[in-house]
Every structure is written in structure tokens, then in C-alpha cells.
Image 1 (tube, helix red, strand yellow):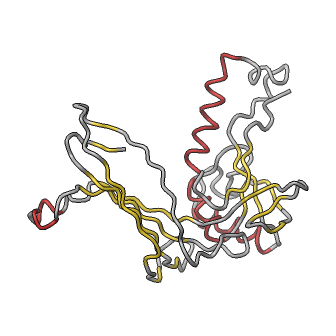
Image 2: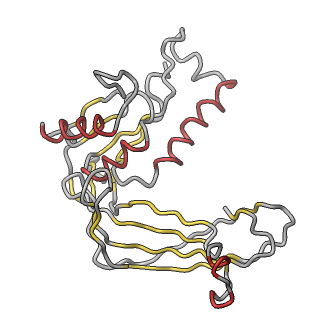
Image 3: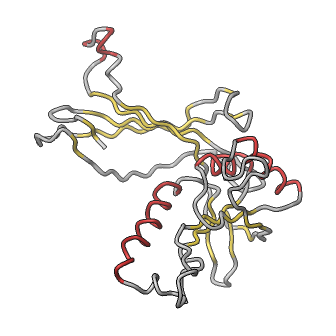
Length: 243
């Protein structure tokens, strides 16, 4: 989104770094190098509206990438910087603070998922076997109030017992849980919060047109929020809501 972009020419800068996260909470890092960068000009808006939106599609080749798997969870940092397209020499010190009105970053991984012609699930073109468990967001001491140490204990317990996958039964989990699965290496089946089998007869709500928008919006919001996490292997979009 271009916030308050009327009559301003801007540039979107994308940069990819191979820095290393040294602990689960991201408190210690090892500085890396810039592997790839790209700039996209955003033309000035002719609209008088205070907000405008633009969509972009780009592709590029990033050399020497190490693919992400549950066994080798290699992650990279992607930054997106929105820059006002004017020479920095023309800015005063105060104005330079506004030269980048928005900066975002996230940890990403590179992997491919496919079910081949033999019906075999592959990650990065290699066959995998899933050994997973269902997980509810529940803490034995705090109930539904989860903490990061509690999430880490759950993931470590799974991996210590040779599990490589987890299902977020029966709803999307806190965003921090996916970041931890990215970091530790755990495949995730992300499940939408549309379980309604308690309404009888079975499938009553799922087959009612009046409820279509509510069902679809929950699925869309989950995918839009979580789609960039490399840990997500599967989407569960209709559990316990049909006949």
C-alpha cells in the first residue's frame, strides 16, 4: 500500500540477506551479506485520495540458495523499503528521517512442494515421510494464555521424539508459533477455524449460502497471513464442517 502517496514518486527497494539467527527469540544474530536486490519505481499517483494501492509482480534468480526443509531450516531476511524518490542530498537532516516512510522485514525460506504423478509428496523434489501430531493452543499452567517458552517447549518435545510435522487443530495459531516452526524446522498443517460439526444436521452451516462469506473470509485471512512461512506444508480448509 502507498499511504499518503498523492503526487509523490517513490521506489520500492527489496533486499535479501543471508544473516543467521542464533537463538529462537531472535535476540542474537550473525551479520550476513546482501545476496540479491531489486528496485521497483512506483509512479506518482494522480488521485486526490490520501491512500492509493499498487500491485507488483517480479521474479529473479538468487544464486547459492540453501533450500528450507524440516531437517535443514535455512532462513534468510527479506527487507522492503519504501523510499521517496528524491536525491538524499536534497534532504535536511530532519527530512532524511522521512526519506523512507515505511520499512518492513521478514524471515523467509526457499522450498518447493509437489505431489508427483505417483501421488508421492515431495519437498524440494525429494520424497518425505510425515510423522506428525495435533496441537491445541493450551498451556498446562496458564490455560489458553501461551508464552514463547511454552511454544518452544512444545516444538522441542516434538522434534526430540522424531516428529517432523504438526497440525494446528482446530484453528490458526499465534503468529509467533509459525516463526518458531520456521526456525526449528517443523512442517505445519495450517487449519482454518471453521469447525461447526456441533450444529445438526452435520454440514448444515457449510451447505448454507448465508454462511458462505463467513467461511470463505476465515480461510482467506488465514492464507493471507501465513502464506510466506516456509514451514507450512498443507492447508486444512474444511475440517469437521461438512457432512
